[in-house]
Image 1 (cartoon, rainbow, N blue to C red):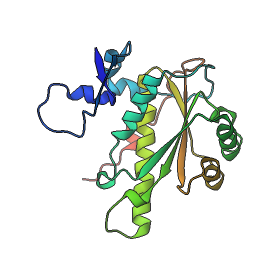
Image 2: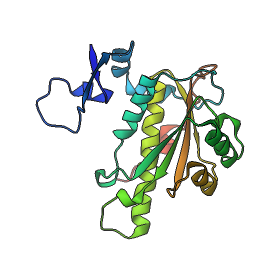
Image 3: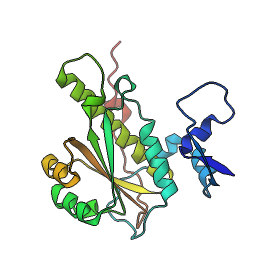
Image 4: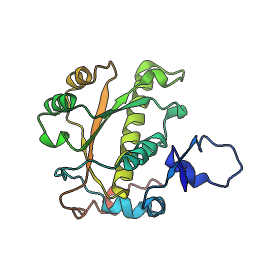
Amino acid sequence: MSYPSDIFSRLYAGEESAKLYPKEEIEQPAPEGIEEVLQTNIFNVMLNRRSQRKFEDKPVESWKMDMIFAASDTAPTAGGFQGFEIFYIKNAEVRAKLVEAANKQPYVNAPEVMVFCMNPKRVKLNFPPEIVRKFSVQDATLAAAYAQLAAHALGLSTVWIGMIDEKKVMVALNTDLVPSSILCIGYPKKMLQPKPKRNLLGLIHTIQ
């Protein structure tokens, strides 16, 4: 069995309508367990996701990272312009700089590290710069959130890093794009149980 370079295009198999997906097919065996992942209940993923700061010292399979990237690619964005970029950090020296840029939080040097940056130049909408920048922040944030949920569905854990020195991160990445967050991914040493959340009666404010 072969599977597309963009794994999520398999969801559209057999449809006749033209879509952004599927993309180019590649001839290689489908990874074991992928069908089960594609049938994962999204509500179960959301209800059981927990931030994790202790990871096993082993890399994540490349096909799982591909699915995480694809999940980010499907996130909704302002005007569909995708005003964000993702930096996938494999370089050990850059990782060390990111630890320093993230208030010396050691778990930033996780098995897999993604940095989500804003790219407002991609947002081709006729609005003031501050509004376009806000759109770009939201785009990058949604992309990171989709990646986080996809990682959990794949049996991985993540921790979202928002306490960052933006300038230090930009220097580490050698980019002029402003970072919004760092997402650290790996196999958890121990799968944590979900914490109780707010009561919906106190969270939802209904205006009749």
